[in-house]
Image (cartoon, rainbow, N blue to C red; front, side):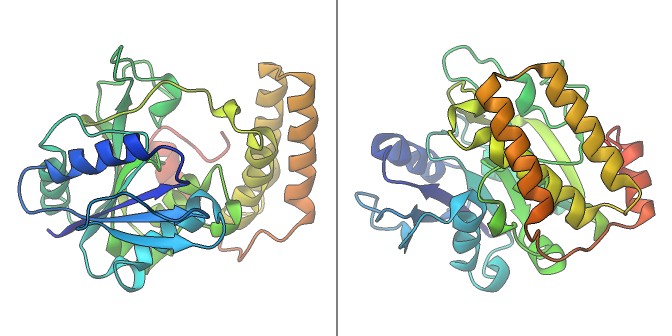
Length: 290
């Protein structure tokens, strides 16, 4: 299988970026082609064999990754699968690309693989980085219903069947939107604990737009993908969960502002999943109400 890798950057972590590129270059087997997307910042100081795409403005995470996909041809068709890697991450093992190839070759229905993210100093995997409800054991690989966008591999046929990432989301939940569409198109998603990306432990709330984007995109996600009876149920559950988690007052205000925005702004085309996909998600342990 021919592999590509897409890394988006805002130009503020050049040392981390080059360390990541070097870790990709060290992978066993056929070389992985790398595209670095400058998301509103020009790409500078990368090795000459790395291709770059300079975007004049920051298109957000999904928009930047879509630009990287297209750098490999329409829907990434010049390669068989694309690795998406955060620019402050690192592949500590040399066999990750080989494991990705073997996984896709062994299972023609496998469309997406989610890597295990581990802190480089402690080795700890944060619970939020295990894409399933039963997340207490990050060393257990399993079938899942979503994936981690900055530590993943996607078969490019998935983009042809299900579309690319929803660029309008900018940040938050874009992976689940693609995952649901991929599952509805018949693809499978695996979480693999043996495919590791080192990444410093962080809190998602470090982003200033976190609370607003999480709420707005949660509504968009439901409006775009769920059968009509499940939309209020899914969003009602998440409203209750948010209140139980008791975010700070300014965060809660931003969350409710984003929740309202999700209902009052266009969410893109609506393509509700089939009920058999709802059942499939339920059998995988994550019914689309939570």
